[in-house]
Image (cartoon, rainbow, N blue to C red):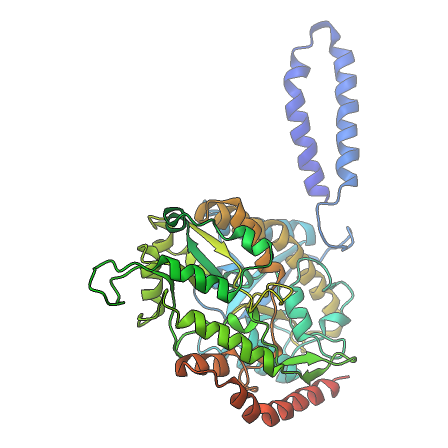
Length: 496
C-alpha cells in the first residue's frame, strides 16, 4: 500500500508543480497551500486500501522465491510469469500483477513446468511429496487431475491456513462448493487462472443475421429467464434458407444453429451444467451423496435432442473447426463454444459482429442459468511436503496472488481484451457476468477418471446415439457411482 500511496503523492506534486512555478509574489502562500494539499493527498491515500484481501500491511517474505510446479499447455504457460512488457494486454497485466506482488510481499515468482501427458504433473507432485521435498511451494494443473491429488493426500487443506479466505470474490465459488470435503478444501481457483474464464462454455450468435431476419438480440430474453432450449430451437428454425435452391437440406444452406452429435467432441459438455444435470450433492457434514433427478435428466435430454435434430440445426460438420468456420462465414446464426475460441484469428477477422449468451436452460421453470467450465481449467494447491512453519507464508502469497489477479488480470481479459477487442457491445459484457457468476461444477466432473457418470461418458454417448437413453444409463451406473462416492468420502475422512 505504501508504494501506491507514494506514487499517488508524486503524481499529485507533479500536477501542482506548474502552479508553484508561476505564483509571483504569492510564493510563500502558495508553497504553504501546496504543502497542505500534499499532506491531504498523503493522508487520503494512506486510508484507502488498494487490495481486495484482508492481509496485513506488514507482510514481508524476506526476498524469497515462491516456486510454482505446473503442468499446463499452450498459452497457459504464460499465466504465471512473463519476462517483460510487450504491449499485449494480457501479457502486460500478468507482468504488472507480479511486479505489484513482488513489491508488496518482497518476493520473487518462479515457475517450473512439467512436460508430458495430462497426468505427468500430478505424478511429479506425488514424487515431491513422497520424497518430503520442499523445493516447490505451489502446484497447479488441470482440475480433474489435481482433484485426485487432494483425494490421495498430496495437498494441504487450504482452509487450515491463516491467511487464505476462500469466501472472497476472487475465489471461484462454484469450485469451492464442489471441492470442499468435510469443511476442508485442497484445491481452489479463480481469477489467477485465465482458464477459469477461457474454458467456460457459452452460446454465440451472429448479430448481423439477427438484424437481417428482424429478430431482436436475445439479451432481454436471457434477463427475463426465458432463454431455453425450445426457445432457441424455435429461433433456429426461422433462420433456415435453401441457399443453393436444390430443395435439400445440405452443407451449402444457411441454418439457425450448428453443432455436432458425436462422442469425440467436448463442445456439448456444457449442457451438463446448463440443464442442471446434477449427480452428486452434499450431506449436512459436507460429504458427497448420490443425487440424480432422473426426470430432470430425461426432460433435459428430450429438449436438447429437439434442438440438435431440429429443422434449423446443421450437424454435418466433421470436426469443431468446421462448426466455427460455418459460423464465421455466416452460414449459421448460433453455436456453442468455449470462450477462448473468440480469441482466435478467425473470430478476430470475422466479417460479422457477434454476441455472447449463457447456454440455455431446460425450461423457464429452472430458476437460474448455470455455466460449465471444461475440466482443463487450472486449479491450485499447496504440496503436503512444504515445511510446516512455512505453510502460512505460502498461503499468504496464494491469497495475495488471487486477489491481485482479480484486480489486474481479470479486468485485462474480461473487460479489455474480450469485451472491447473481441466483442463490441456492453450487453455481451453483462451476459459474461451471468455466465461467470453461474458457474456450476458437478463433482463427477472433478473425478472423471473415477466416476463414469459424467458429461464425458453419459452426455456424449447419448448425443452420439441420438436417442434419449438417460434412464437406462442412470440405472446401470447407480451402484458404481455410489460405491465410488463412498470411497472418496472415506479417503477424505481419513485425513481428519
